[in-house]
Length: 438
Image (tube, rainbow, N blue to C red):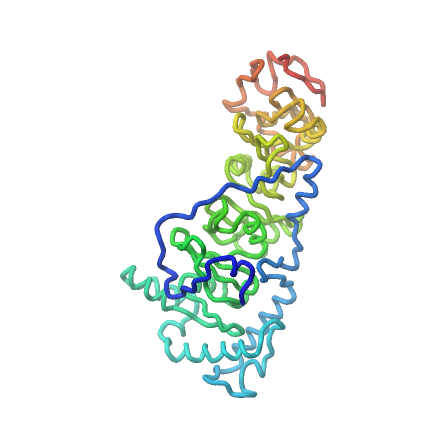
């Protein structure tokens, strides 16, 4: 099966050389420069929301519902109970004649796969007869790295429904997830060399596996691939995956659906929020990621990122949108969160292009869920967070650290003592706006 991406890329088939590659890491480019204004944020965020029950289609794969995946796994179980595979085409006696096939699988492909499976069982019984974990342990037990590489290169396996073999490190990653019993389903094309001349990829009916000598082999769902594709695949700023997708808390798929998922890449991360709360899939990286993790990451009052980083209207900074607020970054002032009433007032005034400029500090608790926050040219006062989240952040104002005391502003210096702003401001009424005297 040749897809648009397959035709665009270098399509050198290289199954025998999956473990061979250069030592230079791929070059990650900058994020796409998409400018988003405050009026456009809601529509921008909507682009990152997905149907939790049907996977998106990316490069012709995906589009699988929960019910379709369950039915597919039933067919795989039926195959295991159908007896030994035929070594040649026997009309009426093939697995496809007795168990049925997925709608998008041809009988010719399924029969070719069955014959290939029978051949593999006869020619490579020592390794291919092992289960997935024992197969990997057998390969890892070889003494020499060269022996491991050669064994992996020759270690290929065919899976029913598909005539395309899965080999080497990609096979190990596939089987570690459960093979055909995983969400990936079966391969739909051979393995191909990536344009960087170092990594390899293989497409499956419901996802992808990518391998690079510096990172290893990891699967990517079509959900994450929507974001990855938008940012240039492995040639973009995200680079190659460096981990599997895992729950942000817990260790099984159920906790992932409840608490959210994360997958790490060379240049950043892709997060998937809970199925119970929006189900957005978005990327995050750099200093905005660092600030968010400092605040607590997914457990912070901001919640999950729900859209990719965007360029600010003045073209000078960047920002990311989260479930309960934003983080704005500017090269001269750094990355700071903005949320709640303060965010609403600030956006109404023009956000970064308005009279206040960029945020230059964390919010400071004033009691009763109220906060003050300093911007380049003023101070805003109001509820910084949603009521249910305010208590999680209150301690930042109760016990200020070194950065809470003195900071030089463009026009005037000020000091903080506990929760009180001195020198620049005297008494601040709730929700009032105080400008620096420049």
